[in-house]
Length: 284
Image 1 (cartoon, rainbow, N blue to C red):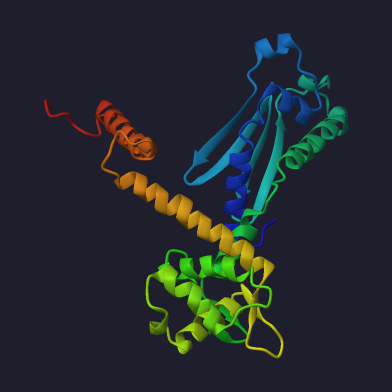
Image 2 (image 1 turned 180 degrees about the vertical axis):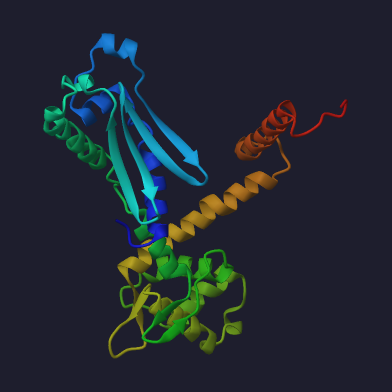
């Protein structure tokens, strides 16, 4: 069961992305605790399928005539159900007295699959952390403005925090201004103490820095350092560089692969659209 629909959708999408190989013979044999001999491999197809009905996908892991199906039920639960269409796949007869033995096959198979699907990181925790840093928050009844990820001042603050973390006695209003002004390309004297106090308040209430008791100096928290490094690198290395690749005018540049790949994708989509009749050719 999940606490809110967003958590379920993010988790289920992560499960699909990380477990598309669950239908391979070795994975299926581990899930169902059955050895798969070569003659069986020749007769049956073991696979993972992702089926989409509307916008809600479902995962199907096939074993002989049986299947494990997973889907996001009513936006509140990840449901895992095993369907056995031929009990002889497991050496069990079809009569009703064999039901307890069949349950001993189905329930452990469900649990083994879920055990495999445990994610190494919680994507919802990452989304909540991003919102805590980059979206407006309320602390003790105070509304704290957002540190917008794409804003130049926010990115400059992240970069400045990495440097401030190295100062053994912490940093003050003036120290942060000295690091921030060059990053923004403005003279330090144009950044008023009041404006810097505004930035310090945002950083403190978002949990990125903390005040040293009985002083006007601050230190960067461990959370603040990690968040600043990740978000600054993500913007510099992915957002900025990827957009630069898309707008480059040199088609032979070695870093132009992304733009050329997208151009090839557009051409292929146009070809498929014309072939299917969605787009009429000039001759038509």
